[in-house]
Length: 370
Image: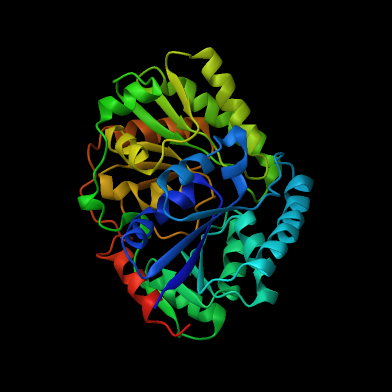
């Protein structure tokens, strides 16, 4: 039997997470992959990462446009509606045995919501999690309600999904997909990454800061406090930044980081997209992580890295013992950075890491009656 699997991907983040499963799909004669590409992948200022997807050749690439380029509230809201319109046309003319969807972003929610009347069989990854500092929390639960299969990262998240859908059926605790077989993952050499991205081979902090999408009026103050802290931290470290995603008021942080780069051109390095393997190499080479990205919560522990987690964006998410939480207050950020820099390498467990995550997902997809 041939399984026709669609994969919804809207950003560098979800595409990197899918990679272990996509590699299995590519080597399985029973699976026919269709990459459904939209969102930031199709926008030039975010690196036009659809080109990387086409180069990887995991399967046929479908492009669905409609993502807003501006990040004010009105643009995001109207863009949500436009994506629903564009995806409605797509679902009307395309069918799949299963469609994978991941996470909690607004554009992923729009793609999913438009599929409901078409009764698309959705398989959702990373449901049941909580991020109280982001409207992503709402989008994630919306996606959960629309999905038929659920691949969650921990037993607690399985319990939450069960509560949301009212049933334990088709809810599987498999671990975080991005960590699947990570101990065997080939990573590029750090010196090669430095050369490709024009980075100096010096001690650095890996920084990713996204806006808080609840209480958005506070982001200007938060960005200012983060800038104060980063200016001080340049005294001891270089700052390597992966730029923010397309969220409401993401431009507040992009503008702050661009301005910081102008003042510290030899200390601050702004990267739009490393790609999964090069990002992991960079994480491994860093002194520690600073920001409010989910990779600090999900992945950093597997690379022995401590994380200074800012603000409330990841509040409510289960954390391993490598995470130090602080407010968006410059003195707190600086003190936490000094603290974790003295702690060396994290040697504890990562609560999100499980064996054979990707292969377990593939086996479940192929075992379900479609």
